[in-house]
Length: 400
Ligand SMILES: *Cc1c(COP(=O)(O)O)cnc(C)c1O
Image (tube, rainbow, N blue to C red; front, top):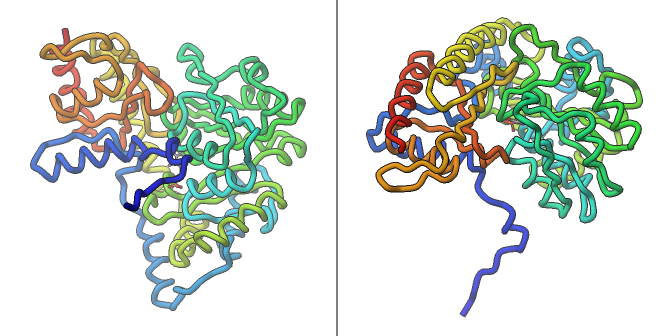
């Protein structure tokens, strides 16, 4: 009798837990539950009209065929201009790869750059996909906990101490998903100096670049010197900045040889990202930016309301994060409590309790290597945020 045997590597490849909780919340909604969703990892705003129009124009003009694998020149040039203007970084077309989302950029990088024997330092709490994507080609994710009392950021010394002879790279995600933490230029410079001194490559995930508050100065770590630029790959994309998560366009910028290898991986897997989405992304990057500014103003208002609301709930502690659209409250006071005789031992148990008892969807911190916390995305209306906070407050009172 035939017995299906999956590859061993699948033991490390699980469904993304953020997508799993969103799926459960959606299913509950479909069954008539009134769920407030803090789980989603995407802006709740519509894609701006000028971007949609560019896509419609592309379709009507018949721009619907294969393109160059690594992206059309028009989009690459828009990205090059963006790097020059926003980040003071000069790249050529050969140093840019456009992919089907920032996620695919990282995946291409992983396959092209890592192998068995390599260690990749991943500060925790981390984006759920990093450790899995590093492990797929056989490299070892080395999780480096960032302390909450340091704003969920690693210090230069902690980075330095984590480096071994096998360390190939470190992942820096500032502003961060899931914590909203963001490094200052001085902190990034100190990390860059160590990376140069010790020959550690930097993967800088800058997808939340535009989502900074309180005048937090965003600086790309690649921009400190020619030396650091040579050993950094910058990952970015249009998903979060322009509410374009479904369009699937991300990009990478870095050393020519590495970009070439990543492009070869892409040429043997997905080929080019969608032609129509590339035209839309070019408009997003080159066109008017007022929709982004409006979105940031709205996110900022919600950020303040959700953080102060969380901090008024007895047992919750939440820092006011300078970036992204997530907060990462400490809920460890509720662990080891019980509801109706059932133990709440983990953040996963608490998230399940909140979904069932309060009809509020949140993601457990354990999914991000941050047990004792929950991740809430404030990518939902102010009204929902206020109602959701009220429900959480009522629900946790029932824990004993
Ligand atoms: C959303 C996200 C990405 C990329 O998303 P894509 O939709 O694939 O472009 C990358 N890194 C982090 C940390 C994210 O939250």
